[in-house]
Image 1 (cartoon, helix red, strand yellow):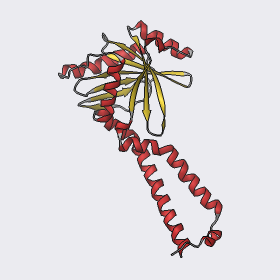
Image 2 (cartoon, helix red, strand yellow):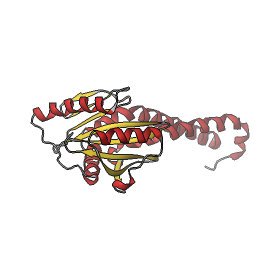
Image 3 (tube, helix red, strand yellow):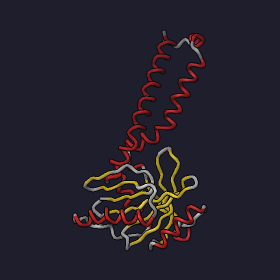
Image 4 (cartoon, helix red, strand yellow):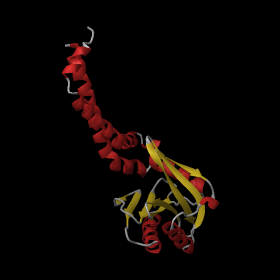
Length: 229
């Protein structure tokens, strides 16, 4: 049976346009998160550049890098995190074998956001941030944010968290170069605790993107039936 396109005249074009605009907005905002939820391994960190590329472009970044270097951290390079259908994030990476962690710094508006990251060779990880980060206390994953704390205070808290895993017998990943962080980050999202973390964060995106696709499919089916009726 052919479709009678003359029936389109009975439809309110503004209503149809508004519906698809809403669906497009929901997919734009939530589809990247839904894809990350379905396949966390698609989130991939990539090493770029070297120590000479760890340079600040704002006063906040310069201040943060200066404080980290005073704490014994050395520049390592750039880490770029790629996600499906989402802009890449770029972080400056420093490391301190003595502190047993990496420091990643990224510009957010006029601020510098700091994360301290320690990976273990069995896949466990500890992350401490100076911005809001959901608190997690699991057998293989400790994470949380301490907004308002400076690098020194953040490092003290991170050391205590790392020591918990060390005392439990977990072996530290003793490599502190950029390629080691890239490899550990890939494992973290593909089959480590980052897989659970990512799905907790992106569940909302999956729900909204799935709902938008269901509504769009239902609308298209009704439209086809109307044209064919």
